[in-house]
Image 1: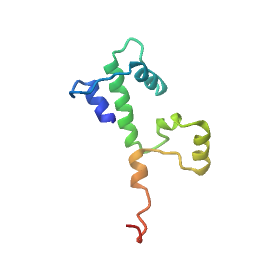
Image 2: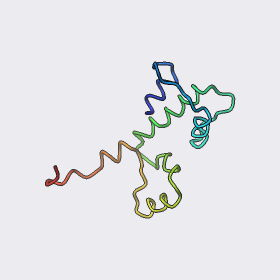
Image 3: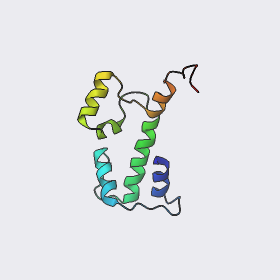
Image 4: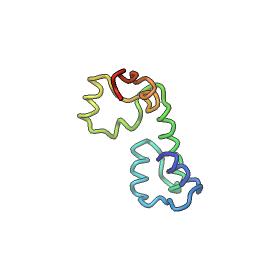
Length: 101
C-alpha cells in the first residue's frame, strides 16, 4: 500500500485518488509529518516514504507501534516482541518446523 500511495502522490497511477483528506492529515500528524500549507500529494508522498523506510528498518521500534492500544503496547514490551522492522522480523523468524507442511 505504501508504494501505491507514493505512486498516487506522484501522479503515476490511474484510477486511484486520495479521497479522505482529513484522514490523510490525521495519519500524517500522528506520524510527525507536517501538514500546514502543504498539498495532499506532498503529505502523501512523505507518509509513503516513512512507511517504506519502516519496512527495512533495522533498529528501534517501528512508528506504527504507537497506533496500537497502550495495553497491547505494554504486553509487547513485557514480552520483548515490539516489532522493529517488518522485513527484519520476517528474516529473523525461526525456520519452519520440519514436520510443518
